[in-house]
Length: 280
Length: 139
Image 1: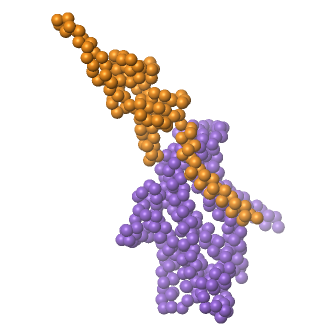
Image 2: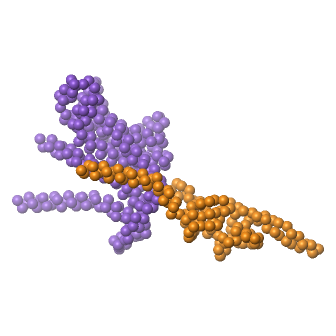
Image 3: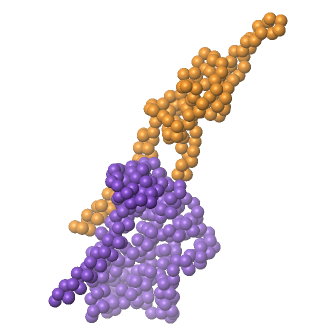
């Protein structure tokens, strides 16, 4: 009994320590964004603990400068919002339809194509970025918003995850629905989608977070500054002050946090269902 | 309830960012000191000189001149342009000038300014070198 309690205590302590390690950079970023520029420069230029831990006056000067002085920020912010929203919506649509096709339809080569999808999903970005670049160049889509949107819309991630989740569905329900109506779209909307709502929520969150944090695609596929995203701002510490970058980082976190709060319940349900199926 | 709160928070955040996008430049400009400028222009200065035989010749010559009342301790404030965050903005620079002949309200500028320079003749606040300003009525 005591061993169990000690074990539980140690595991909890380790988890709390890990959580602190993960949350600490975010916490420090948020705190540093409310400190004036003088203190930030003092911390960055200093190699003594005294300067770092000495109390600093809280101020909104970083946000003031970001929102009312650094106008390129708005273009970058809205580009990120528009790209992420479009990518999430269309990737979900493509993933849902393609996933259902892999699950329900019968045609030659289905398994081969699905295995290719899985292999593509496992390939890192560094492998796929060059073929993407060449393909977009041939289609004259480089330096356009489509260069960022299209490769991510047709990403295999959503397809594979949704298809895997659909494999747990009962085919008889779909067959029964086919007796009622011949419209596949209706079956998808009325029968399939409500049953995989949890998975759709999780995939929405993952795709949004993934598209919100893209860095390589805006840097490599687009040259025009007006088409770039917020993530390109964070690498530019020479032209832009640290105070602006810190304030922009906090604003960068907000949409993801809001979306997570929206879908967290479904995410927890999905994880719980996964836990149940593992132990069955 | 939690979902409604997060949706409302998201909408409020987007509306706030939209409002900032629309009004940020207006707010930024309202904080800047507004200045009125004029070009350094050549005006006619009366020149008088005596010939060897004692004849006094009065003629005029065009010279670069500025209003005398904007000169403070031998210096004037100019408007310059610089690129900042991929945008052009105007800022103030203090320049020392060598002055010459006075003609009415104007004084000759011997050195320190060129014909393309724009000098500040009026401002609605304190200005100093390097400060970003808004040119309200350029001449």
